[in-house]
Image (cartoon, rainbow, N blue to C red; front, side):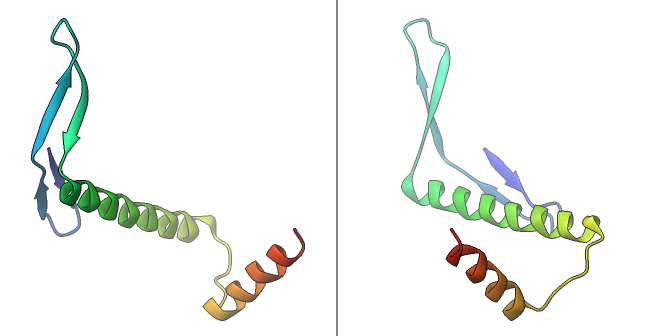
Length: 79
């Protein structure tokens, strides 16, 4: 599997093995722990980029980081 970053066009290659059933159909994939962690890191970064894009597209006014943290903590205290 190769994961490509469209912004800087870098690629990450993963070594993989397939798990197959009795008829030879692929039903799973085995990755090394190192490759799995790389994949999780890439997914986390993608999630952050999507959240950033959604925030920009929402048209809402940005607030300072410290104010956002204070608001989250106030909401958490009311749970």
